[in-house]
Length: 494
Ligand SMILES: *Cc1c(COP(=O)(O)O)cnc(C)c1O
Image 1 (spheres, rainbow, N blue to C red):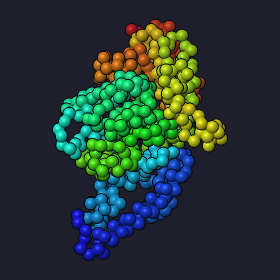
Image 2 (image 1 turned 90 degrees about the vertical axis):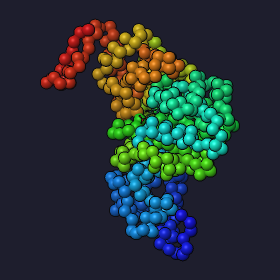
Image 3 (image 1 turned 120 degrees about the horizontal axis):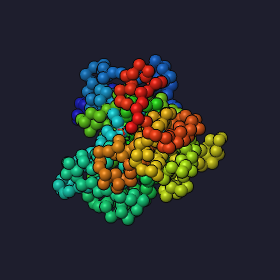
Image 4 (image 1 turned 135 degrees about the horizontal axis):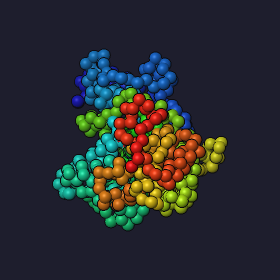
């Protein structure tokens, strides 16, 4: 890969042409960075020039359903495969549709941030959490062979809990849980010189726990280790952790970013020049791109081009959607808080929530001050909430079973309202003690309020809670095969 003998050989000419095209794209990206959030969400990095040069003028980013790219000659192939020209070569590594989504998500996470960011999309949110953390656990430039650890809030998504509690310890890495993420002393006591990364969710799923990102970032940085924040529940419309000192953001794009629910997808967005004493200079300079070009290439959790564009189409309306669902969730939370059968409602937007003030310091609707409806900064808390039934786990199951509008599914972030009982679904595997630690009791229903009119969701909750007073009826498995279908389910009495 040394310099060519003749500076004007084919490879060099391709590199020069590549540099010109990169410069054009970078200039357009700089212009986009100066636009408001909604404009970035709608256009991303895709310009008319890009459309004319590469996509026959198509106004929507095309779905490149293709495994690989063809090259003009050996020189172009050589330049491309050594990453010396902008290329997509093979869709496990890169693809134009992937590039459009990555560019958009990087700009949105960097909105209002002084520095810059880049993004690599992955086949799922779990693949994003796996990729970002695995890379930091592998590197040991000093080759000291010393035991290493990582420090994470215990209030994390069930899959992440398993990754950290089972998979990484299986590989000999110590996982140190922070039981109370609001306790800075606990973070400080667990982070040391052998800590490879510090991890938290803001807000967490399902507990809606949060932590002081700025202060935990300072603690991590004082030991030369990066802070990774999973901000799936907030989305960049409500929280952009990079501005507050985080180094890496994890998104389950599956959720609110791609609210239509077509596909599973994830993203790692990282600041350029992140803090990480265990990583090489190249990794620190542009962690997300490094992940994409090297470990992602070798491990293979790439996102399909189809799913990239499906996700991109949902991202275009992210801010107004998150505003609408946040307001609807507030209405639903207030209704439930006043209901006699409810023991506790957990929603960060409620003033009664112990973390309301902390969440309010971080969760703001992007550009509310430039929105005619508000003309000032406005807090928004997203659409994830949960509530606990006074009468225990059985009452939770019966209420859940009585929903007629709200879907029973282990999903969230949808345009449709969806509920689950985490103790028997998302958090089933991790066992009772871990559930207690994560505050996921069996009488808790997690609800994610969709884009329906909130009055219809409140009416559904109202009738489901009223059903607790009636004798319990259950659906018989197999009812879906009856000729009557959904309109006349076969019901039995317990
Ligand atoms: C769903 C979820 C994940 C995992 O994402 P997948 O796309 O399902 O793999 C990670 N973090 C949080 C907070 C989630 O809600």
